[in-house]
Length: 404
Ligand SMILES: Cc1cc2nc3c(=O)[nH]c(=O)nc-3n(C[C@H](O)[C@H](O)[C@H](O)COP(=O)(O)OP(=O)(O)OC[C@H]3O[C@@H](n4cnc5c(N)ncnc54)[C@H](O)[C@@H]3O)c2cc1C
Image 1: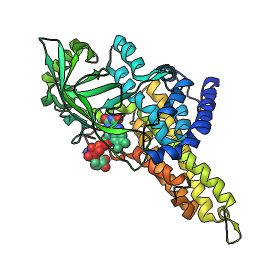
Image 2 (image 1 turned 90 degrees about the vertical axis):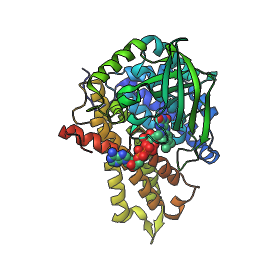
Image 3 (image 1 turned 90 degrees about the horizontal axis):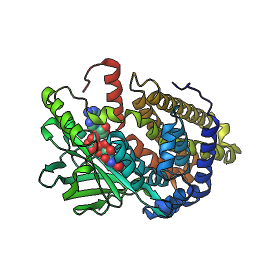
Image 4 (image 1 turned 45 degrees about the vertical axis):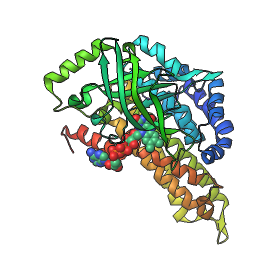
């Protein structure tokens, strides 16, 4: 078991500086332009790949850190740089985590590197769970996967909604119902290899924030994939389905509510990076801006806002680090992963709103970055489990009851 410590080790400090350097020198200057263009920022992702920040090796190394802190530390810096560009860099890791979570070691080695490509030839991955009628309630997915024994192929049909990198990704990881009656327990994950016929992009969503990150529908129309693309393999799936049929779907945990507990601190760290950016910016502004003959920070109304912002930011970071450490060391007791995913995004929304208030009229214009940070913060209370779902998970964990 690794020691829990609030002081980062040498490796972590170096990674923090390295990511901060990229965030400051490459992401910050490009953020406004890509937000306005609302297009996937290939040149930025390519630059991240050139220095090894976008790539499976970086992700694997970070995930192997036994303290669990390397990933949230790196992600905070990335999103301090910019959240839209940050999501463009991080989006593929959702697919990689989907493969690593249920794939066999051979499948992980085959597909995770293909999600990222290489420095000169960047590829993207997408993780496709949500559907137009199933977001929080992922146990009711309608996308079907049917096994064709004659050809040892799976045939997938359905529509996925709000998918990061959807349709532009090279590798799509799709969660589909194999036995819909078993709801969450009757689902499996599949890799759709690059260039597979029948997979297409539906509408591209125009968004409130993280506009440099691509979000689109993914349509699966008689998509045929080899049997080997079932993550975890057929034997394991058959055994899982047989167990589920014995107990039925009653009493099952909703996968969206518990499966992602270990990855939630990383999403919290994304929001934390945005909140810190807004706090730092508005603190400097409040010291410079004069009204009634003195810097606005000399008014308690402004100074107390900033005191509250930094306190909430630090509280969020402590929850994130604790959850990241628990994910590797001893596991969760009271859904601490969800606590961090609830607290940090809510903090980021409030802090970025206060930052706009501190900047006044300038804060409301797109000339200044704080309104963008406010728009970017909001998604974190919605995706990867809404704030309400996090509270539901915590309530169930502390009570042992199926709170509805
Ligand atoms: C920019 C963006 C990127 C995304 N990327 C991906 C991706 O890469 N892959 C992917 O699979 N999905 C992705 N999503 C989808 C995202 O995960 C879902 O939007 C999210 O899970 C919420 O689902 P929903 O939109 O269907 O809302 P709903 O589930 O319909 O919820 C609507 C509201 O009702 C509340 N609610 C629902 N159920 C309960 C309950 N039991 N108790 C209390 N309140 C409840 C919710 O908290 C929310 O406030 C993305 C979404 C966006 C906007």
